[in-house]
Image (cartoon, rainbow, N blue to C red; front, side):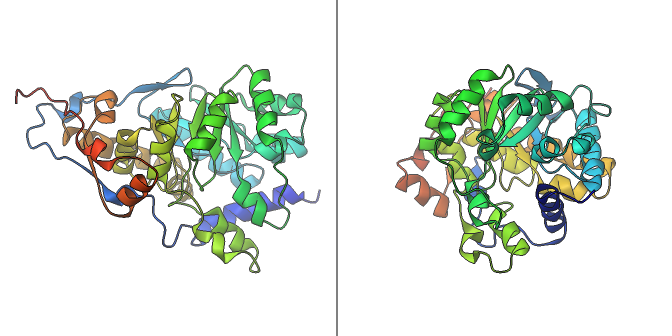
Length: 363
């Protein structure tokens, strides 16, 4: 059977992300401008630091998400199995790639099914907001039920849709479709960008529409403008660098709504995750580092996750934070372009620098 347009596109995206330079060339996440205040007397032990947390009804060993990557092809099946098995062993969450391909062609469903290797993980399904305008809710919920997902990402990929040759350029009334969708599902709906970030105004609208969490997926990591440019050499080079840096997006969303926040978009280590949590996120996730690890197999993915855990714990040790709640209140020095962006958006970098330090010491 000939591959559908969606299936061919998904295979192309996977190949490009695996073999080409698809990260932002100049714009960064902003985390390089964020520094912790070192505590020379931590007054705690690394082994006693608690990085466990709960997310959408599941307990996690660390606040990490393997972000949505793929589905819809034989190669995608192998990758998803490796990612899921590693997530199960490491005790972290995982998002599936867009399930549009399996909705269009049910024979592709098994490329998304990972419960046989990951029966207990927090597993998140995935559909684009544009597909909410195309498919009956039942078709989407059937796809979610098929893979045994605990929640569903609705990805907001306006940039990608606008510049890909076969993209959907009409997002009229998409918010009302999202609101209807959230009201009809019994599992949490998490709004997710795809590399261009979420602003405070959009965060407020998403919260009002009934989503139960927001994944900011900001600029500084994988650029879908770059991915689409690799697919179409006549593409729009100007949009390679489009988007809100992840650090700014996290702070804007955290300052606007009380929903759980996943920081993604250029998160490349447990140290980046620590900074994201200190800026206001609840969890941190990434796709590209785990995709590259998955090419080597399950063990490589697991080893990467364990490195992240160790890095997160060391950051917490060196700032005197015994748990994630303490980390969330840790003082930060924010300088450079990121501090300038904060001020231009009415956010005080000084407010982060002068948080009351948590400590067992008597000062």
